Image 1 (cartoon, rainbow over the protein chains, first blue to last red):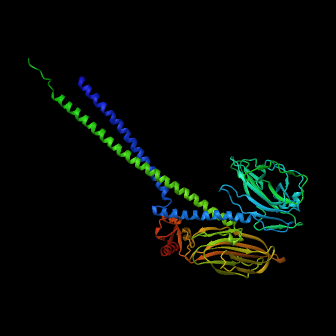
Image 2 (image 1 turned 45 degrees about the horizontal axis):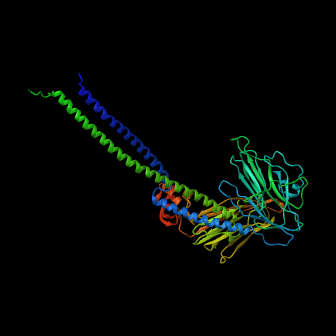
Length: 279
Length: 294
């Protein structure tokens, strides 16, 4: 078959016209694919939305239930502050009586522990020493008189700044707070605050550590200690850590313990690194 | 001079027609494709807007649910901080309770008729080592609505008789105190922790599997106190079960209603009662229980 120049030109023209059609077909197919994906996304989103109620009416009623709980939460948050204020006060006693009461406290967020706090009235006529040591879980940990006699600073506690510490409390109203925090690499840190001053900070050296709870003086009602009555043990915290990741947590053998005493102990040093904080 | 016109053969004419036909077809296809695409693009924009709006709505609900869960935790935590009945706030139309260490229970009852049921029983059958408890009873105390309460198991420091006490922050409620018989040395306690943020008579779908047909009792506290009788070493155990009975219509929470709808039992749900509650369709519930019980 023989093609004339005209025929060739005509064919070329047709091919030239076919090209935009091909481009248009490509774009159409892209738009179709996009629609398919969008429809899938919409279905996923709708399924998720329907888990909050299949009909808009259900979701409206669910939102009303949530609103109602939000109002209750506000009531509870206002009241807990009032409760803290109320129980942060001590009832007056004779001037030679040492009084203590637990301050109601709560978790600052769902991942943290609630601090443990006490309000104390330290009499002028009595020396009151705040002490910290690491003690074994053998029942001796909450007997202040035995703890006063500790003479060897603890070793291998797993904590930084391990040692035996003490500080004489100034007379008057004092508040004491024990806080547990987590570092960014998930290590447990504890801090002791006296009034608005951070007395002490220590970190568990293994990054994978957490609190296993604690025991403390109940303090739900005010306790009063007359001059001859021994001062109370306050607090002991349990820590657990994971020596090998994934193989489970074990409890640390020694635990930080805080107590009060009439006497200073020879082997104890003053709390170091006092730091002004924002409270 | 004779002008010569170009002469078109039949084949050339057909080719020319085909050419123009093909051209016309191509133009038609191009226009159709363009139209179809612009329709699709419009549709896609609409669907994309729907997707983003739906996702936003999902996000809002997720956030509300998170706030709701955290809020309930914070309400329960606040209740555990209470030390006296006066500390319990008014919680509108909700029934809120928290028991602490199995010894103290703080709760708020809203409007409506409510009774506190205090049951003291023997958790174990008497044996040669276990002394029978002689004070088994169930006391029903009518509660003043819209009030906070503290229920407390009163335990002597070491030896003595156990008792319980119910105090309210409403002055019109008269404190109820009860001492149980039998002196013992009290040393141990076990309890299951219960915290509630519910509507009175709130029905829970999973309760239907337990076939509770009577008016639901809401257990607030379950504690067993353990003691020994003097030097005999014989054990005495007393179980305390504290529950609320409310004479208000049974309701499902809106959240629970969604679970029920998802389980395809929408007939159990009655009319909307407001404030995130639905009345329970008692007839349908009874029918459902009978059917499942077979």
